[in-house]
Image (cartoon, rainbow, N blue to C red):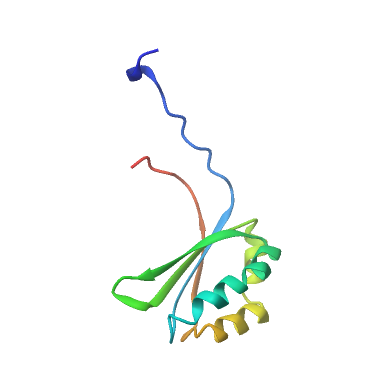
Length: 109
């Protein structure tokens, strides 16, 4: 089989929700340890992991993209008192924006 005839299989998209939180913080230095320490609670509530992003133009503006077991579990976790307290300790300065995303495609490039 020549290189030109080889096909790449398109990855199968999983039907998992992607909750995304965006918010501002008062102190970007305090959030890291608190975010890491809260991982056990997130995992118990259905989190499959995530990524923390910082705005290049505003280091206090953060976005967290999580992968969650189910939309129902993510929606149950979002308003929890534990999460509110953790965000307060982490210096979240405002009410976070929360959206639930569904992956529909993975473009090759």
